Image (cartoon, rainbow, N blue to C red):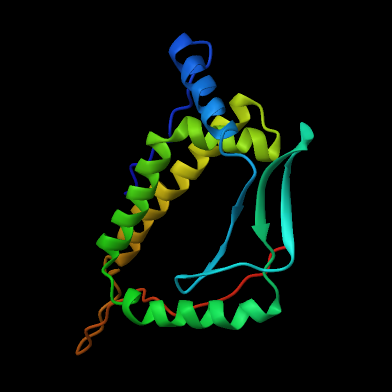
Length: 179
């Protein structure tokens, strides 16, 4: 049975949380305007076309400059994922879940920093950014827990002379191009 509880949100009326948020905002403000590469199969790629991420609360402020992937990047990205899947598919569910829990721990430890990025890039207020970061932590924790639940062999109706069990297995790679 699942024993899940949501990540608690920070109370910004507490002076220590407000101070930590201000420090994170200053830190992230100092990192604005950087250019970020595409990374496909461990290779860093720069493209002629760029995506400018701007602060919606201050459109003159560049949050970051990102490479604009095109159709020519789909096949190499798919091939890199297929190559990685050859070994990843044999990674036990416990190890996969541990990776998700490590991601949750990083998000938890750097929560105010992630909040600050959301504030600059999306125009969230402190409470909304905090809620989004907590939700990301929740997804990592819940999916880790569900992966372990799904990894257990499910009991099936056993007929005389038969021995069956249900196991979920990794199936492969897919690509999604979001709107």
